Length: 398
Image (tube, rainbow, N blue to C red; front, top):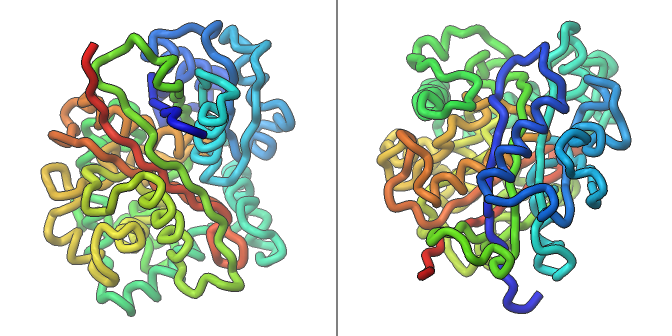
């Protein structure tokens, strides 16, 4: 791969939320057009497109050519379009593949679009779609049909074990949500921008104890997009560039993963090694808080604190804006929302905005290194895919 470098040249998004009257195409086109405009390029400049989507086949019925149908009005058809499906890590997987194509010298400029429509007038449909991200042979018939919240049951089981190991409490998880909502208040695309109190989180209704409704990421519609280019292709350009230092993905193995977050730690280890940085150098983090306790668990797995120190990191205020290592400045999955195929791309977008200094009232001052962790699916209780990306702010003379 030589000395080629890959930069995030542009970002875009369509608002996350409940959009019953907007199509997947409508959301995807909005994000893609915004990213191209932000990058200062046109569809003609794009060499290839990676389209990330997880459950359109179940929710809308569109299979096989999801990217081609979603982007047909953008002027991108005629380019190679690759459809990527990898549960909630679909966006991260598309990003990794696009970057690798540039590093290999196959393309110079690639558009990555993640989009998902999850809301449906029949509420069983999105729950059935979510259940499909687990190995159905592991699930009882009721769960596989979408009649019960499969992943929240898995998360709740893990959470109870985490509480026993670390002394974390439901009050800690409530504070994660309070923080996420406070951060999301400054994010125009976030699904939930209204702030909440810890008591409101704790009394929002049980989903699967100890998880309450507000502790769980919501059903969401939305889209996000990024333009990746070789650093050479990006010349001339802005003085500030966001370089992709590392992009790694691993699959959890239920036969070997005794630690529920071991696959995250392994992906992080590989990413730190590739990037040539350590966790102490990371300034801002986007991690996969599909349920609030995951923030504490993954903080440890990413090396942001020691084993068992996730609750302490939170209580110290280190993960809030203004703290040592702010986590989920865009609101995370809990508050920004979680349209499955768009989430990984939205996380990249947030870190890119932070490193460019364009995050507005949620800006982490002086941020130079950002990390994204995105996970998806379940095979025997292990994550089916877990990705970690590391990005850095680069300044150069004109």
